[in-house]
Amino acid sequence: MPMPPRSPRVPVPTAAGGPPPQRGRPRPSGRSPRPPVRRRKPRWAMRAVTALSVVVLASAGIGHAVLSGLDADIARVDAFKDMKNRPQAGHGMNVLLVGTDGRDRISEEERRKYRLGGAPCHCTDTIMIVHISEDRERASVVSLPRDSFAMTPAHTDTTTGEQHAGHPVKLNAAYAEGGPQLTIRTVENMTRVKIDHYVEVDFTSFMKTVDVLGGVRICTAQPLKDSYTGLDLPAGTHELTGGQALQYVRARHLDGAADLSRMRRQQRFLAALIDRATSSGILLNPIRFRDVTRAVLGSVRADKNFGTDEMLALGRAMRNFSPSSSEFMTVPVGQMGHVVKGVGSTLKWDPAGSERLFAALREDEPLAAHRPPPAEPAERVPVDPKQIRVQVENGTDTAGLGRRVDDALAATGFRTTRVPVNAVDRAVERTVVAYDPRWDRSAQSLAAALPGSELRPVTGQGATLKVIAGADFKQVRKVRPEEPPQEAGTVVRGDEVVCGKP
Image 1 (cartoon, rainbow, N blue to C red):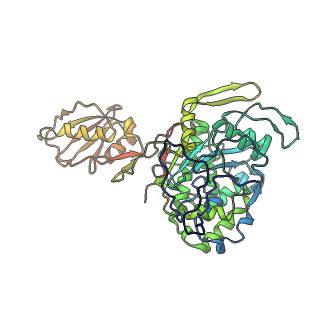
Image 2: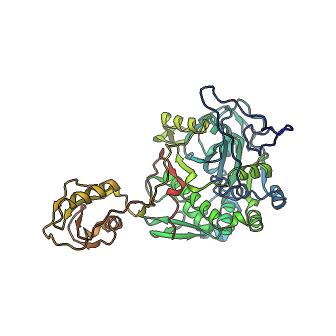
Image 3: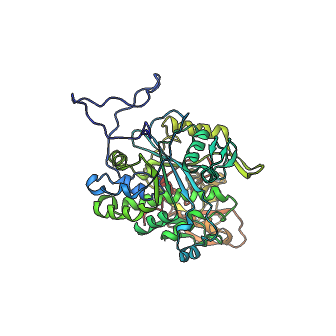
């Protein structure tokens, strides 16, 4: 099978010592040429590969001597065999990452413990496009809902050998009918994004990866309990082992958002997993790196051309990659519950929003406008300030203090009344946050923005919180929600969804 045209390789100088010849399609004349790509050794490789084995392989840049033999541990699939009429190659590299059911490879004890009963569906449980930019400075991870309405191209059923014309399906069913090839063809037809590599992981490889990394730290502002998977996490920070992590990313009965909510947790977990891998020293220790990858490679499948050379070339190019360089997005949804005869309830993409998204991938552009990291990190709080209504009172004789506190809270995102008033008591020394006990989590979020303030419960006060500014007031601290908004079509950075440092 021919090498995908845009798989990255380390440039080799010409005999005359000049730069290597330019490869790939020329850029449009109206666009300025990109600066030469600086090849780097990675800190972060394939943020997309649910950080399963292949992710780790791509990130070390440690050379053939250490990686010798690891390539042979990866099961191969001829994912691009005889594929024709494919989209034009873009800039950067696109990896289709699929997570398959694979519960038939789990022990009986683990199946009972982690609620993996039932027959395997032989379909894709997770589908993501991972785009690595041409300059190796950015990774964009796009989740494709498994219930997306899709039209398959004509194909041969891998199970029965029967010839099928194109027909409607849920996206995850394409794998059951035609395996990796039909999945790739269906995704390419829907997105017009050319897939360069294919990586497939299952439950076994997922759990192994988490365990060999020593667990992954996850934060949740809300308790998470799902009777279907057995997930039961109180609000707070947790170190998840492989089986617990599997429950976390599989749960889809926690709220009304179902699969969309699950994809948000998968993206959050992906960021946390890479954060653990890059901060644990594994990527800097060649021997430990080799041992870890060997422990998980046995249950990964990849296309034939995704080998050691490609992993090393990608690794050398990505040495300085960081969580803030990654961005996550779910395809914008236009219609939920679109019923198709013979298929059931599907999910239709928003035509305009999804076209903008995939055009950005094709043109190697960021999914969202550049947002530099804040100069000073904001403290995470359990409730989004935009959901908290606040009345400010001036509890001192200092003229204008109420207005100053109101303005500062509003600038941080709180829904202040914008009409501060004077308090009855004008000799307040310590700033007070008065709240109805039913809104205690909102009160904690507001108090975090007012360092040193006193929390004062007031039964029957209602949903509006009250701030009585005291003589000790100095400034409002910036805060941000523990769970950033991640509706379908919303872009978030990796550093916005990992836990804050302990």
